[in-house]
Length: 580
DNA sequence: GCCGTTTTCGGCCCGACTGTTTTCAGTCG
Image (cartoon, rainbow, N blue to C red):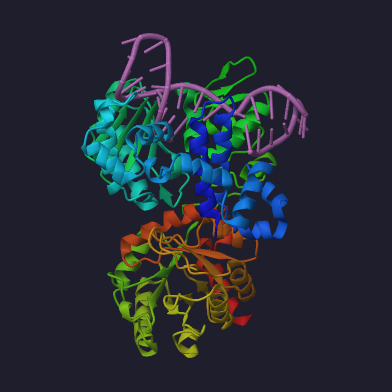
């Protein structure tokens, strides 16, 4: 996969071109940056696109024209881009790592190289130790110490944090602000509001007549480790959870526009603003402005989209993946909501690697208002989790029967297992045992070092057994820790559709598997999904909101999600599947 | 360098904040 390397090359070229002072270099730089983003986030292998359609196919990608398509072609055929090599000869700088330092942009990076020979982090640290920066033109005592702080921060930086780390923190900050009586309103914006699986920072907007006091309160919160910028409208602080948080205090007239603007995504906003211009408006964070530049005040987000001829777009969809075109046609789907969820089909107890008893899990599920919960412990091959064998399941289920009797239908516990899909595609329990279950969840946990073809046929074979109700965490990835195993998801989705096997959207925050793009990919097939938490304790059941957020990012309605159904309807799906 | 309902030339988002300035440049989002 050459996507990443080509994206990096264009990113570097963007930086170098951007510092040159010609009339168009700024725009040229932006063009390279845009192309870098396109290629860096591309879902297909760019060399496949080139092989199949040549330069012409490359030019169909957004932000790629003739010039850049030819450079991509040059790279794919020769392994080099001549212009890039020449620029690198002139500036042998590791831009990627230097620009990751807070306070260093392309201009300062080049100044540091030309005056001090700084090319990367080690040479920068060397120059910092010798206090050489403060005497440079445009630098000073302050910028030297800020850059030194930036280096320390970058070295301790964990990168993007998980949604499950950022969202609760943002909610905590909102409640601090609201509890102060200094703000009339405080809301979460940015990627947190869009429920992205990882977050680069937190964004919060507030309405207040006491700007200075609010910023003081915000910058003095217990979780703040340092203040990065502080002004009356915008303050940025570093938080002890390893990320930064922006607070913006907004004028009431602009609140809707600001919320739209700061929710993003950037690509979504660029497209929306283009449409605004086409319709004779101007849209920015301060509002929607008419032809003579007058502010159309007091608009909420919905009003803004409607003025622009679109229906309201839920934040989770705002990624410029076709949602704007849908909104213009008034075809935004009615997305799944947390309140639609009637139960959880993937949970564990202390019989294997969970920490709570079935009674405790059932009690918590009832408090959440669920109708049902499937108990799905691991099977014998998964030794690390103390997986159970056929006999142990039989004994366990008799206890579940007793508990169901005691619950008198207030909650129904569905008997199940998270059965291992073995290397050859067979399942880790006897057919007889699987047939005694209400809800069989199947998953790959071992031998993930296979080719895509082998893994796909392994999973398709397991589904073909006609014993599997749910395919759990279909790609096996762990965010920031483990790559997904290679698998052909369209083929898996076809098999699932044939056998009425649900694809899982695993809501565990390290998994979120399927993720949004894979949901969009597989939902083209007539497959149904279930959103499950894989809870290993009672409180893990609260992860459901991350799964629902992911389902919404994949544009799913409740009609596509089986555990939004009441128990009797769900049972039809669970049963039907066995009679295909 | 890209792109097109103002289309093959001439736009392309721009404001907040900070530090080093003495009116502005660089960075960030």
